Length: 212
Image (tube, rainbow, N blue to C red; front, side):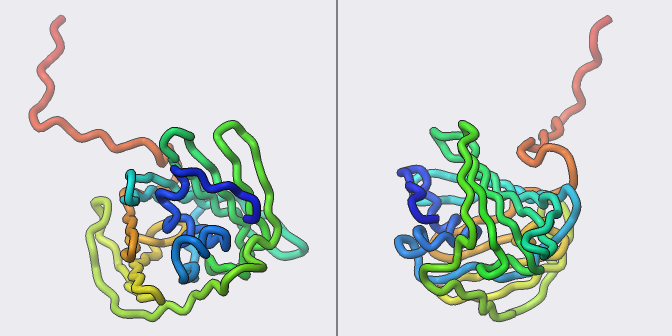
């Protein structure tokens, strides 16, 4: 993403952008590593909401499974990443993925839409820059309770001391947790509805009856 200026707020979650976006301009400054080339979980109208703890502030982001399309004769699908940037608003990053895995050579087109609706489009965004690796090593399979659901989870290790947990039940990237220099984890996931809407906590005691 040559020429894409990284503000102070963006740099607070640069590691997150590297893992999910893999932008060479960010990668050179933040971490020598690569994208996680794990399989996409394609579920119509599916979404997953995550939380990351950056050095300066927490960051929330949503991954949505977008629409299907064709690019230069190849079938593809949009994967939408919406990030809540403090002091800026929600930034939308859309990846056109033409393969089954989220990795550099499967993304021929990328769009960034700012809160003021300004949009930039980048063709072959990962053609240049440092090599982006996706040589994850499978470690183990386990069952975990995530967002009130019992899921089968696969754990992988990646270069740079990164550990990732993945499940085919989670729409989009399938990620449950990524641990490394900076970490993020899944908060909730589903199909349809508003992914940004927090679940309300039920009252401990029943509400008193309404007076006539």
